Image (cartoon, rainbow, N blue to C red; front, side):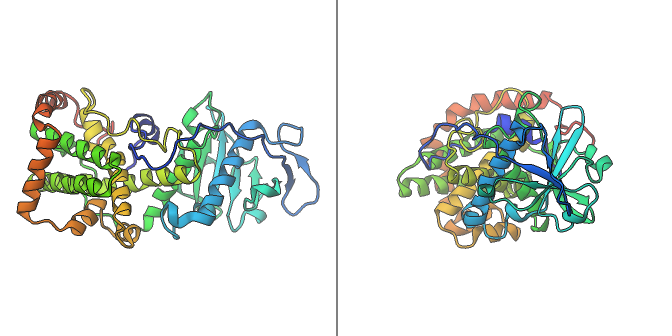
Length: 401
């Protein structure tokens, strides 16, 4: 599955408006843990850079973030996604960059790390409770790793498929810097994509965003669907929430019946990207970092834009809608829903099966939604967005693929 640059959508589509827990102010990073470095299998110790017995600030913050994140996966994996997604057990290589090139790497959970050339064992503070960490000043498979832009799910390190994540200072790239818990959410999001290699993908058209229908009547229904999603997110009464979810199902089914591309693009993208965005919320909530960019949803489901319309509606939107539908499935207590998604179902499939509405019920719910959310006021904006979309390039990927 082709993956867009994550940072663009982390910035534009910061998670959905999920009102679940009291927001807490962002927390400053604790002091970096003391660490010493020694060659694996040797008793001679060398002090980590800088030469004062401590990791530098960025490395120290990174290990603090990993410590908290790994603890949550170790103790609460079922509340993040399910027991099978264990970020804390994945072979993981963290590569420090300076904006011009790779500097060094840390390797965790790799079965051969101790015996690899140039491996240096890192002695971290015991209270971090991290697996053994090895530093490599000569990065393994360095030529291939140099070509990795930000992360790689399937890099081969000493014969073992390894999840590679690069990190740096905030001055160079804020989204790649472990200065806040946002970085941990990013690592977990992309880690789930790694785990998705074993999932069965819902039927798709291979991310044919160029063929996605963006005429005015379809955009108007997208706007109507977004209004119902927001209502369901904001509803405190379970009956009101369920009513809004039924409207969502009716609107989505209407769109699928008329435009097959909705079934072949919305649903598989929500299955994959929506699930990954959803765990940003669950992990952020468990960590009680309610005000981070990625685990709150104030700016999600933004109004239909008047530029980059295809980029937004044929791709970026699915992160947010998929996360919201994941939340609704969970709130409805649909059994084993994460396993069903791993097996090829989309979030919409599960909601539609749960309510099992007849055609007449779908029609009634659609009309109710149009009245509730003042559908007629959406039509001029939808027409304008459609005109803009028609004037924009259909290739949002920037290449021919």
